[in-house]
Amino acid sequence: MFMHPINFRIPHFVKRLSLALLAGIVLCSCSQESSAPKIKVMLLTGQSSKYHNWELSSLLLEKRLSALDLFEVTKVVSPAQGEDFSGFNPEFASYDVVVLDYEGDSWPESAQKGLEAFVGGGGGLVSVHATDNSFADWPAFNEMIGVGGWGGRGDDFGPKIHWFDGKAQLLNTPGSAMHPPKHDFEIVTRAPEHPIMKGLPARWLHPNDEIYSRLRGPAKNVTILATAKADKAKLDKGTDNHEPMLMDIRYGDGRVFHTTLGHCNTKDDERVPSLNCVGFITTLLRGTEWAATGKVTQAVPHDFPAAEAVSIREQ
Ligand code: ZN
Image (cartoon, rainbow, N blue to C red; front, side, top):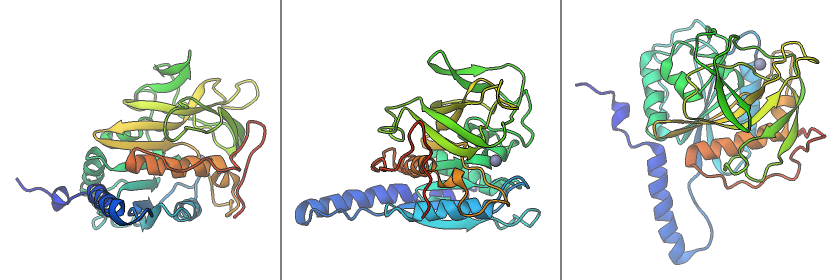
């Protein structure tokens, strides 16, 4: 049987682990300084709907990821909407983690199978905001992100997942994805011992973003890390449910970090608060490291937001 060559490559994260072990042996004998190879990050972007702005969001994601010495970031831009995707086949196996900031055309089967093999084989994946609007007709992708919204996801697209009675629970009541208008809202930590969340405050304020609500999907192997709630009485399209904002999803041997935060559109500029929120940045960077390695080595920054006040990074 013919198998695509991608299946025979040694994944980069395996090579990195081997190098790290080798480096550890060398360091033990001659130096105290760390020289562990960087985590190789593919930031994959290139399309968004008219409600979003991938050029701006990917610029800010790249800026934050690249600022950390831990990561080596390569930006991969897909063909534009409606263009030929026949040559689109990202080299996932050369990376430790893929950060997806993409809402657009379907991928050819070879690219889909490539991502499935990468994540299923132990690679990391990060899904940012409207990425979970994509690929409703790609079952494995929906397993990777746990739940998604819009793009053809109706009431029969699987359960919703909410936090109530102190735990994550699946709901099969009617109603598909919606969100209230952008506003400042409180994020509540639900898994304080998880590596991404460890040391973060129990509650913090996030600026001018969308509370993605009533997302649906297979909702398998999902751990809710943080939630937010939109008050029905005060907000159009509020649900009164504690909706998942940050999630850990397992797919095969791989780890997925899904953040529903990070809205921006073509009216925004580089100062857009949602993406410059220290809470967004911190969880993005920690989530990317965790998806790649299963661990988080980053300290909580001193300017992390409090329950009463947002914290927006200006540089
Ligand atoms: Zn949005």
